[in-house]
Amino acid sequence: MARARKKAIPFGDPLILGKESFLPEDRGLVHLEVGHLITHELLTMPVHVIRGKLPGPRIFVSAAIHGDELNGVEMIRRLLKKTRLLNRLRGDLLAIPVVNVPAFLGRSRYLPDRRDLNRLFPGSPEGSSGSRLAKLFVSEIVAQCSLGIDLHTGAVNRPNLPQIRVSPKLEKNRELGVAFGAPVVMQTKTLEGSLRAVMEEQRKPMLMLEAGEALRLDANSIRFGLRGILNVMRHLEMLPAEKSPAKQRPIVVSGESYWARAPRGGILTPLVALGKAVTPDTPLGFIADPFGKGESKIHPKEEGIVIGRTNLAIADEGDGLFHIAVTKNANAAARKIRRSGTELAEEDDHPVSDEPLLD
Image (cartoon, rainbow, N blue to C red; front, side):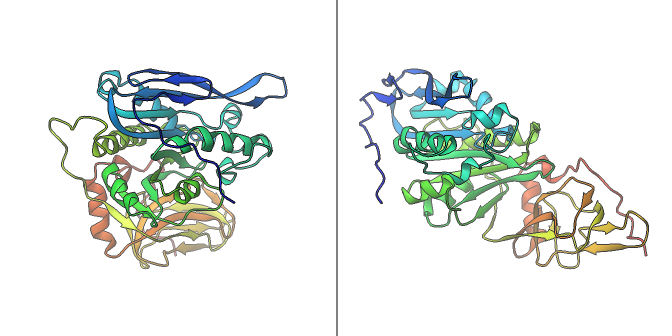
């Protein structure tokens, strides 16, 4: 069934968002009405609108579709503080620091009814509260933008190396992913009900950043993400080029990933950090019997780069422990990541000894 879409408007015409109207060079904050809470208080989704003086793309940058993913919220806050740079904006920027306000208030990934907002798109005006929120975002934001950047983190205790995820169906996605400058670009299929799936259906490019972990602010991830957003805006000529542009950072592109899982339950000792190259011979870590009866080594199935992992020291059999992006010549890929400038590839906040495993 075809979905109603707002038609693109000429740049000089007003941009209508909710009950507000913005002409070129206007800026302001709109509170889009989502519905009412159980206290009968009005629930809104705040959207910052910045219109440039001259024509250009209209993009959105969003965060906290999952309410506990905070790095993107801080990236957008810092983006909005760059007033002198944004005064030279061409086109329009819609910035949504917190999409999922109910989950954000609850410090939770999920909506109050335990649904995942990123599985409810494109939503319905007659659906659940989350479905209505998704519908609002699609009809007010997606429909009026030509491109989106959505900011995420890993789950609690599961940090991610900064990585861009794009759909391989749109050629522009890879170009923009490389322009962002993340050390890894993952070309992955979209999931039903996700914002990426909606953007793909409308043939609009979208970048999804994964960096850091939930409920924590990571300075390296935030700096890296903000720099990437500005890189994309410069690539689109929405912002002036840098006077001394940084050298193009090497990028690792992968179309496949998998989780190395716990062969049995026990105490986990990791031996590799994010961004490191691994082969089937590489010991990722080991699971030890907490009662001292033995331990089991953990090895990758295929060569690749560690792009995510657990920080928990305990695991049940089958738990995902290390997320690995498949790539040929992983050592060369790891060298690219080191040269990409992300310190996450060099740091490990849960360091362990490299001593040989016990017999």
